Each structure stands twice: as C-alpha cells, then as structure tokens.
Image (cartoon, rainbow over all chains, first blue to last red):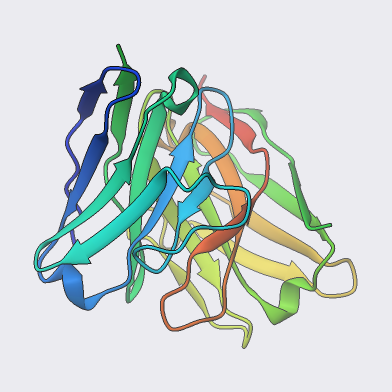
Length: 105
Length: 119
C-alpha cells in the first residue's frame, strides 16, 4: 500500500516561512491535498490539487508537488497557524500522511 | 450551507457493536463520495471506509469484515455499523464528504463523535 511520510514536527518563528514536506514514491504523479487540524477541531482543507486554495484560506498558504516530495509552505507564519497538518492522496482509496505538528516559537 | 452532524458514539465493551450516523444537509449524500475517518487519542488521521456515489464500498484492512458503511437516501444520512469492537477502535470518528473527481479530497467534515471501547 502507498505510504506518505511527514516529519513529526516543524518549528518556526513568527513572520518566517514554514515548509512541511510529504514524501511518497513518485508522489509528483498524484494530486496532493493538505488539511489543518487544531486541537479539538475537525480537519480543515487548506490546499487541494497540489497548490489550489479553497475560498477563505489566506494566500500565505501555498503548495507544490514534484518527484517524490510534496510541500506545504506557510509564509509570514502567525501564532494562529500552530496546528497539525496532514497530507492526503487517493491511491486505490484514501491515504493520509502521519501528520506534522507546526509549532510557532 | 453544507453540514455534517455525527451521532451515535459512546462507551462500548470489547466485542460489542455500535452504529454511527452522519446527517447531511445542503447536499445529497447519494450523489457524493462519503467517507468515515477516525483519529485515535493523540494520533493521526486514519481512513476507515468509503461509499461511492454508485454504491460501491471499500474498507481499511483494519476494519474489513467488522465495519459496514451504508447510506439512507430518504434520510440523507450516512452510517457506520461497527461490530466486534476492539480497544484499538477507540477514536473520534469523522464523516467527510469527498469530491467526485479524479483525485478526491475532503471538502467538508463533521465535528466528530467519540467511540470508546473499554470494559
């Protein structure tokens, strides 16, 4: 079965750029979606089809996907961005990455 | 406005059964891919099951043979029948709508319902 690998944690200072990776075999041939989950809340879609943003998601959130790595980039990080982030693809069925905890220092 | 509201969670003994419901509004369940996704305490998201708009159903290996996903079109409601429950099934269970596309993603989620399997 297909496996998505994310770093368990990423730390960044406010105002800086955070990059969260999602590794998978030839993931660049698939479309990757990203979700943000804050404590006690349901996940929220922040990026779909590698780099598209749903309405209401700030332009600070962007995505890319090539080769064996997809990346979620959060520019000008704010305290409110602190959350768990999950990547997801559809390979036969649904596959989620293990999640990355973003800490804003 | 699209809404998903889960119910039916609770405390159940190992080996017991529980049925979760997910009442949808603002769209038609039968016209979409619908999934159950769970999250064990302190853990990541785990896909559980999907029912496609055509009615086909699929399950994660961890629940295959024990869980059954279904829908009631007249009630616009999604269900998850969970039998032979184990301690490792303890989790918050979310229902989610997936886009009917080549690379589906979940655009709407419910608030989740907690299932605790314990004696």
